[in-house]
Amino acid sequence: MGRRLGFSIEIPEASFTRGLVGDSSPFSVLPKVTPITTFLLVILAMTPCLVKAFANPQSKHIIRWVAYACSCGFMFGWHVHEKASLHFTIPLALIAMDSLDDVRHYFLLSIVSCYSLFPLLFEDQEYPIKVLLLLTYGALMWVGFSSHFAANPAPGGEKLDASDNIVEKKLTGWISLGYLLGMFAIEFWSRLFHHHVYGDRLPFLPLMIVSVYCGIGMMYSWIWQLSWIIRHT
Image (cartoon, rainbow, N blue to C red; front, top):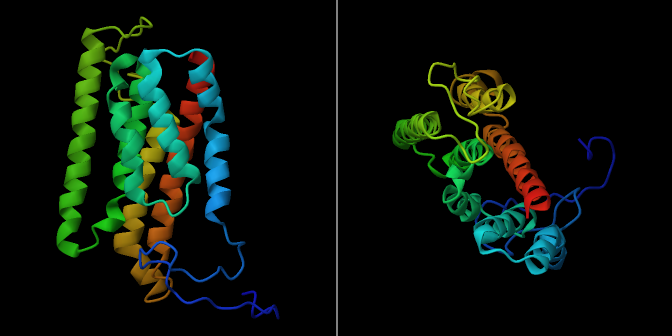
């Protein structure tokens, strides 16, 4: 569009998807981000956690601090891959049962993290496998967490009632539930409607939608972790 408006914009080689660090031509419009810039952003994002850890070291919070540090690397690091989300999703699983807030956060984050890996399994024969795995994983988490907190009150005294509906159980709120259901809409669009609407044009659009959508969830997780660390450590 910029070239059509008369701007002189260099068209880069399409090498961004080759997976080789440093093997990419400059952006056409966006400024090029250097490794030192991202390094400084990571350190800046980690600063509140580092201050808390050094000022009041507590062994019970080390998993949260490590997970948050990995989250900062994922959010602001250079050449970060989707699989890097597992660096903080897996540690957070170890403390997910500490409270209902932790369960709610982990339930959302783990599903988003798994869904963000869908583009890595792009063969048609792999599609039903990855969908069934994610649905099974989500169902098992729901049953396990709901059953646990229905029988055992959380440290804050909150207890789930097995007779309540999906939102009243408070394992997820309306906003989180709507966000998760949005993944179904994305899949329907990508698998059924995109080709009929655009044909062979914009082949990157489904992948871009998945990346942006999951990025919103990851950003929420990072903010949630930062807020928890500031308020409780």
